[in-house]
Amino acid sequence: MLAGIVGAVARIDKYGNVHTNIPMEAVVYAAIEAGDLVYVTMGTTTIMVPFVTTYGDVDRGQPLARYSDAHVLLAINYGNFAKTYGLEVGSPVYMGLVEKGAYKDELEIRHLVRRRKGRLRER
Image (cartoon, rainbow, N blue to C red; front, side, top):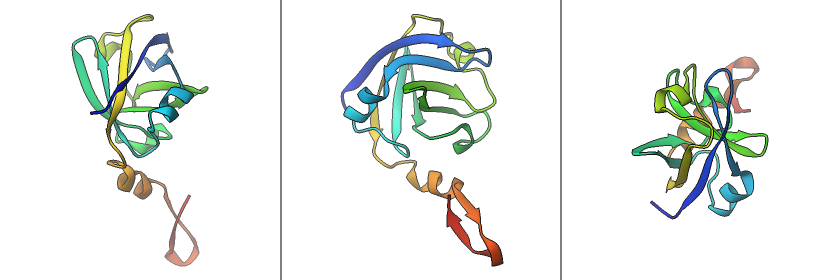
């Protein structure tokens, strides 16, 4: 694992998605991009999640990290991230790169769309 990004929970929406105060610029500076595997540490709990572009990039019930309004959002697809990990506004959050491109193949598969005559192409 490489050096991490330090932030905090800025807001929790009605679905339990955690909006952090970690800006997009910090993520770009840390060379994290869609398809990478990142760690997220909250209190004594550390989880590994893919950095993705949308909720549907992971299976139902799985955690993810992505951008929302130029900040990092932590969520569970069809789940409540804040409740699952016991977070509240102000809770510290640490995030960092685990492995470049570790989720890239899965992300590309999820972004394939069918064209006419049965051919596949990327979205």
